[in-house]
Length: 277
Image (cartoon, rainbow, N blue to C red; front, side, top):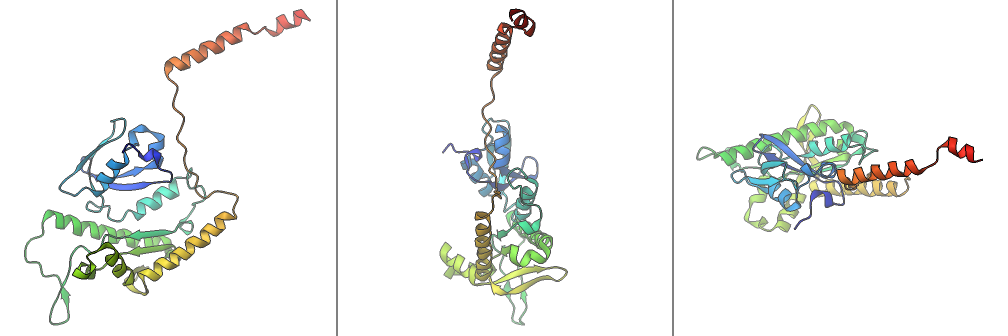
């Protein structure tokens, strides 16, 4: 498959972690349109964002100038890329000209699930009971979950009063590790039936009165309202950045300049035109 980020028909933002630089890396359609050095094959993008921590994926741009050693964003500090997506929208005025503040954004953030299960003790307390030292992968997973939770808290605070309607975070609990949720459909149904966990300003996290399914339905209703509003608006909310036409080579440019000069030299001057009158 030779399709690249530039071939996508809508704005795309995919996170991964570059082990070579020790920093997150974002695959972006907007950047791919601007330069071949940031245009990657979609198969490589998928491999990069899904790569395990112990098996980095070597990925190069289509022109070979940009090379990264990619690990999965979920494993390496990018388990919740919601803040990166929001920043991309608010600062990408060419594609999102009407996105001015958090009130103009709807976010559905889907987590990767809790990283470990807890053992229930006889006295009613639920306390982790490790039987051995955690592996490097387990430590990375716990760290990523902590970062994801902090991002969730920060995004909820950024939305402020609009967080209840404009921002939904879905994070499955450890209960989904049971044998009854082996299939993807069963796991999704179990996750949607759980009560949603919300981040409240200065009050930490709390269980919502609504389930994840009810929160998603409410967000879908907001999307329907937004779609109806856009249908009656003369201005587009999203302007897809177009791929620029191929640049002319230096030889073609020189030929064009020469032709222009020759054409200009054959034109009569105003003085000679007046003498003919």
